[in-house]
Image: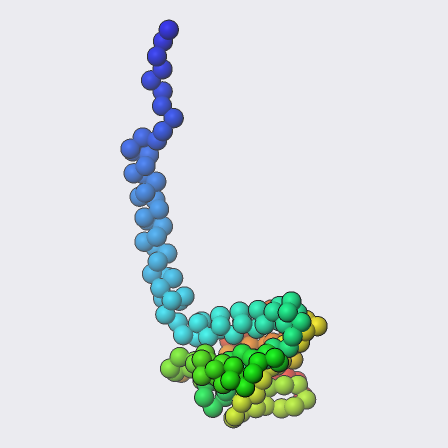
Length: 168
């Protein structure tokens, strides 16, 4: 009877090599992530608008109720309501609105055939049948202008690194 000395584990050298490779990959990827994802306010606003618009369209269809994304052009804030909210709930939604970071502002909101809303409040509705109002949201930062295109029948929101208008 012979005793086998073969083991099914990893050697210390193999583990050290794997840890070194992972460390090298993290060393090069973390600065890139910190520079774009975690600190860039424009990206943060973009993600908020895109994800909220997509989720509101889905939520309106699933719950069979109308939702609205309210846009305070003057106050640089966004908040969400639905048709069955009480006045107190609506006031709370306004108080807890998403405030755009310093240096980023809402320039206007444009609806086809209705023109641009450049001051005050407006809303984009998301209907129970699964569609939404067609709208463009324009935001500015110090150097650039951006456009979010809310498509009525698609769940995605298109984003452009420029000021885009509806054709007249």
